[in-house]
Length: 88
Image 1 (tube, rainbow, N blue to C red):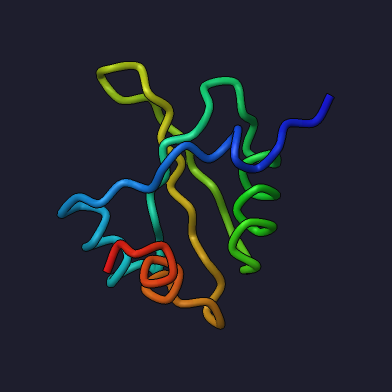
Image 2 (cartoon, rainbow, N blue to C red; image 1 turned 30 degrees about the vertical axis):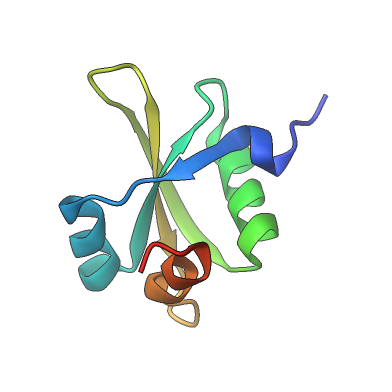
């Protein structure tokens, strides 16, 4: 059973680190469902924001939340995605 995009992506992180990554490496950080796989996260981000994702790295924070570090392609600036979401 496939999950819907809104079930996989919970919310974007807006921290100093995420803003630095957005400017320097064209990445955004999202909190995602604990059980979501990298391919599921990639598909959900690409469908939700109509962008091209190059890579996904995941990690768990101290509180047990799963973070997805999403690197966008050069033709999709992360700052544009952040602006569309209202982060900027």
